Length: 462
Image (tube, rainbow, N blue to C red; front, top):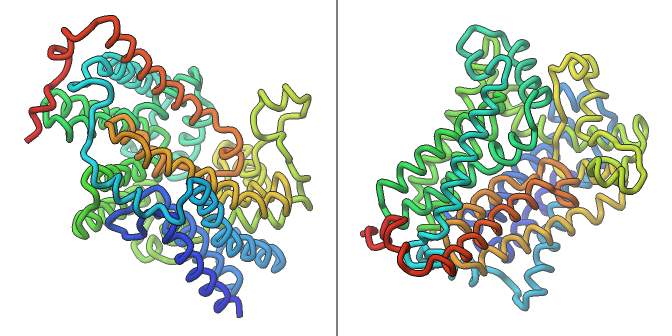
């Protein structure tokens, strides 16, 4: 029965996503279709089928009662349907029944400059931002007691590497705002922007700019040995190619998927003690278990332990600023609480971090069934508004960079809090809005004479 209902749900979800994703073709992968294929089907739906039928044999899920499996399965099936309905509501409020036409029109557009023929004025603030980002990456790396990436090649075992990873992310001795905003947040976006400018101008200057930002992105995406960030950063160029060229060939798509898979294999081989191929590829251990079950386990774990082991959190975990403003006692986020319940010794020893999962896990931990019912519609609506905003915007390198960044970094399997209050997104918007205003000011005050001297000519593009 559960298997039949699940696959009926999957078919209905596919049908609903067809009208809100622009395209579900893998060669035209985009912000919404990625959520369907990766975050929902691969990271959530497959696990729901395995778990409800007790086919998982997973070390976290084996600790749970059947009721938690059932509630988690129900929540995932509901999300598969409610999320595209929330997206459709956003499309409908724009006066359309589908966003396929506007998506196709966007893909057919050429890249355009932002405010002037050669975008000279906007390069000043972009180059300054790039210098700040690179300096922030160097600052972050310099303040690590032991660089985890270097430790991998120095013979450290997996437990020692786990400790270094937690130290790098949670025990950073420097300014976390410099690290989080300018190093981690800004550097990858500037890499995408520089790449888009290079595709527009074909100039050596823009290629060098891109190369520097790519190298900086590699170091900041791997500084704490997290496996996913650099892989998603690389996959971001697949999204960017689709947006620039209107799609990619099957060969290019398979190339990016192969690179991602090889990077995953390499990361597990380097970070796991005595790793063997069969264990790495098993569906409930290694890569398979991490991708299909461990990422989903938090959803079922949340139903098991909230509110029985920990009361519902409400808004107390949104941010310290909001808690102080409302006179609430600040709480850890659900993912951290769940990890502390599951493996308190590892958390105390600094060897374990969080148990992230589909956003409905935190929605349940915060607000109970009200959160589970409302959150998929709400998140779907917000995601579609973001998607439509970019599709209606001018196709410039900056907008392409931001579009790409959000396409592969939305916290669908991060947490509900990030869709209520997300300082990182707000700061990113403020930074690039400031770039635009500075460029506009330079254009007005400096006039036309610097336009031909500050940047590569667009006519350099063949």
